[in-house]
Image 1 (tube, rainbow, N blue to C red):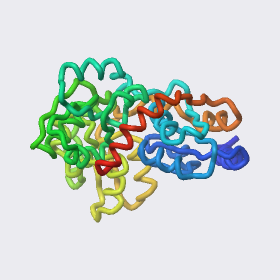
Image 2 (cartoon, rainbow, N blue to C red):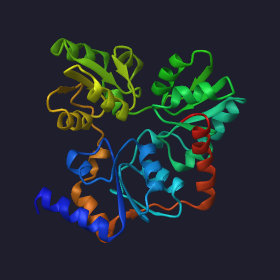
Image 3 (spheres, rainbow, N blue to C red):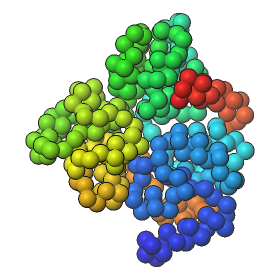
Image 4 (cartoon, one colour):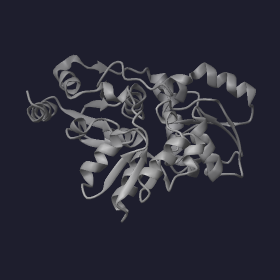
Length: 304
């Protein structure tokens, strides 16, 4: 089959099998084209909870499919590729959080959405990259234990300097591949371009940005801006998506090495196979769902 034929067959199957397809923005263009929803992980999970379909296919990584299951426990949730994980999510588990609580008594545990369902069960509040500063500001406690991404945490700390923070040395290895030297080289090559960056990058990179925000925030900023050139400091698929969406503008990857290999595991053939009954279903017990959902509910309560 050609790509177009395969996409058409996927569209037919998802209607026949009562599937809603969620695609994270770091997937390839041909995968995003067959999506019902494209976006960041938590937004996709919220969308899945609102649709009538009883089967949800997450084209992303495992923690994202788990978050869908937490918000929609009555639905069947599938992951597009069984090996698609998240190195940052794997950096912390429930036992580690319990140990950190003992080290930092009296601190509110704030975990990034990029964590496993197990880790969320020990969290007080979850945050996304776009909502983190506002949520942390609204938490009554002035002592914040921010996990696991210390780079995102450092950016939040700049926005909320009145609070006391503790971090662990975690983070996204994909975003950490980019350096301040890469920014300097990109700006020299494209002096008219604005630099848009994700806060998971190292603080030395974030400090040089014209705009700092989530994946969807970066895309929205570039689309609305009257500028014509942009250097993109996040996963390189965003460069591709923006170039399709704004053919009259130019987009440059900050680094050719900013590629999430876990996201790149999913192909159209994987989506097709899942719809044919070969996908991995996500199972979470009721107690895990209940405890993990508490941290997500608290996120919304504090303005997420």
